[in-house]
Amino acid sequence: MLPGFLAVGVIATLVLIVGPAIYAVSLSFYDAPSLTSEPVWVGFAKYGELLVSAEFWNALRNGFVYAGLAIFLQVVLGIGFALLLNQRFFGRTLLRGLAFLPYLLPTVIAVLTFKWMVDGSLGIVTITMADLGLPPIYWFETETASMISVIMISVWLWTPFVTTTFLAGLQTVPQQLYEAARVDGAGPVRRFFHVTLPSLRPILTVIILLRSVWMFNKFDVIWLTTQGGPLGATEHLPILSYRKAFALYDIGSGAAVATLSFLVLMVAVTLYFLLFPMEKAK
Amino acid sequence: MSGTKIAGRAGVYIAAVVLAVYSAFPIYWMIASSLRPTQEMLMNPTLIPTKITFDYYYSLLAQTDYPRQFLNSLIVALATVALTMVLSVMIAYGVTRQRIRGKQMIIGGMLYAYMFPPLLLAIPLYAMFTRIGLNDTLLSLVISHLTITMPLGVWFLWGFFKTMPFELEEAAMVDGCTRLGAFLRVVLPLSVPGLVTVAIFAFLLSWTDYTFALVMIGSDANKTVPLGLASMVGAFDLRWGDVMAGSTLIALPLFAAFVMLSRYFVQGLTAGAVKG
Image (cartoon, rainbow over all chains, first blue to last red; front, side):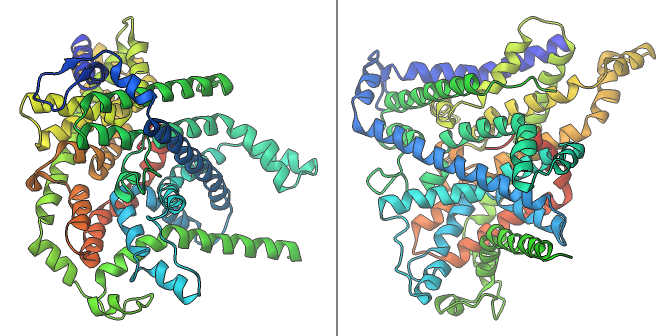
């Protein structure tokens, strides 16, 4: 029975993941204007074109800006929310539930609700800002505002992941450590930096790693919000890859962008492991 | 109570209110907008709808493809959950109990599968489906969702089965069970919390997916709700009431499930390997 189980597993993994990944990399060496036409071997030509193009470097830079800022805000806010939700107060259980809700929403809904709230004439944010005498913000029309918009939506959606994971971690920190720190005269700030953070370092290392990988690969928020615009201001590697493969019908280039973005991520993750070695799981 | 203590308590409650508004207001506004009469929406809207109407729900269900898309989403998500469960249980159990070389590679490979950009899998899968004529089918969507949910399931259940003592199955086998019998009667029932967690996250991933659906599905008849809602905004003049009604309908089952199963959600999150 066990060998049978494993055989099914290995076959499923090969068919679903390993095979397609290898196929994707091999597609990046071909020129194929459609999926039915005969592909032509072009070697590293697609990579060469990409590496000298401004759009590739623009997408790479945007990807780092988007992922970097979104992760930073998620982690800082997430830890802050977790510390708050760890206090005793009336309605804490309800608030823990509310704070988790955004995480359950499909990206599409978060984006549509955001678009509705900032709608040019009827959106609640637009109306409120006008009532307060503030100048209107063109959320998707200017380069900075559109980057801020996609980051805001991403932070709202995925901060609950950090909050909940960190909150669960907080409950594992031995209370005696806090008592000891208190006896030694440490205030709340010092207790946080000298007890909480060191105790939760392994959890934090994993949270940041997972969130970085996901944010770097995240396609749907930006596609649904700005499609990479205006003028490429929010175009990152996943958008570039999709645009090449499915809008410009250059499958080879699309696959090459996806392969390059995987390589960038591998290098980043390897560096991360060198800087913050994973402690052995308990 | 001292002055600083009272100030501290007040600070906690102010922060709690800020967090509640930040997290819940957009969701509240989505639901409120779906229930508000049109003329109220076009004027300065009040915070609470003055009159409740189900018009948008009616027009959404009666005049658009939404019911069909909802059914498509449900079929895809349930099929994804079922296949994920079977495959990941088999692999995870096999890996923890069989002595073979290279099993670290299988588990390690599952972790690396997380780092694949979705498009690194979507492009070749789409190409393969086109060649074998499976493109633009619900099945193609189920297969592509499995590329994310299966590694997740294996990774999670591997940790779960690993901690389960061998002696339990051995005792059952001494009592005359076959290995399959011991597995079905002893191991699986004890794994229910782990199985529920994997099922929830597989459902969540499949139910909320937009990226794979965008690549795989072309025809209106096979669209899932996320794809259908997104194209609704692009297509006509903006019918925000309908869009918010559709959004509410797809979000509410998730909230209900969360209330019932919140224990498992937290367990799954802290296991560290879930939805991106």
